[in-house]
Length: 169
Image 1 (cartoon, rainbow, N blue to C red):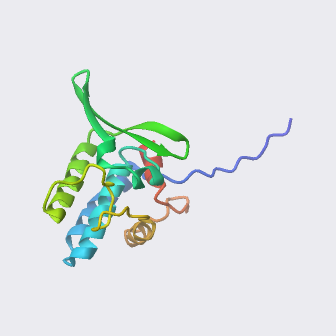
Image 2 (tube, rainbow, N blue to C red; image 1 turned 180 degrees about the horizontal axis):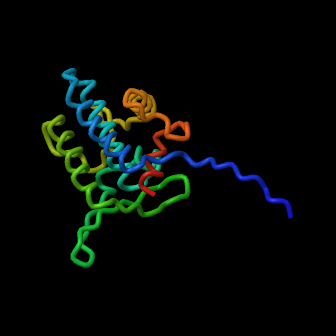
Image 3 (cartoon, rainbow, N blue to C red; image 1 turned 135 degrees about the vertical axis):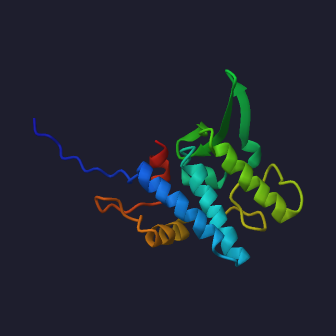
């Protein structure tokens, strides 16, 4: 029996060291711009990355994720944060790593200050100032990775925003 050639099509993930480099540089990237619209865009990209890499959500699932969908409950004396999302494979439960709680709280607090009132529960997490969903972070993500010399992994494979899901896995 002849062995069928296998071509590895998986998107590259970030190593632990690369992830630390990315998050450290991203923090400075957000804080160094004083233009509010650019700082907001960078802040939302930062939190999209942090949340995505800590829940394994697909881009479309996160794009449509609303605050009301995010549930926190105590199971065996530990807080578990989850969300029911509807995506490529239908409806599924998505579990967040414990650290994601901080990122979700920061994102909600930012939006609350921006609105000057409580965030509507049916609003999506990643939204423009008018509350409409941010369709894509792809361009800003790729530009930022290129700036930080992280767009390609050691094997020369180009990272995409989907690489965050692979980092979670």
